Image (tube, rainbow, N blue to C red; front, side):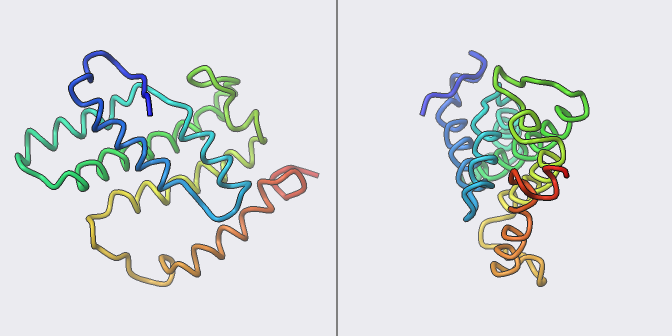
Length: 164
């Protein structure tokens, strides 16, 4: 996968490619409509400054750290940033971001808010330490699948988020 970032980050380009792959994997869901919309946002590219800084800081501060943990941290930071951009684009009424149509212009503003909120979840999940399990009913897989089924009609052309 070819990513485009700043020449300064050439020495860690493979790491950044792993970050983008982790983000794409983490943003996948079982419902086609949500999956397509989230893939649009995650694949829109960017300079990857935040994950590059996370990688650099991790290597400087921690010395030898497990590679998957470093990539998870960097992906989590970028996913959180991406989620905030979805909301920011809607508030600013931006038509394009990184040369691509913004999510609220592809769907609609209410759907963009919902999907921006939804993208916050994988950003936290990706950042958890490997092997650490979230506790409580909100993190059960069946509860997660239920939330996906519940939100999907709201982002479709007929759902509540689509308006009257």
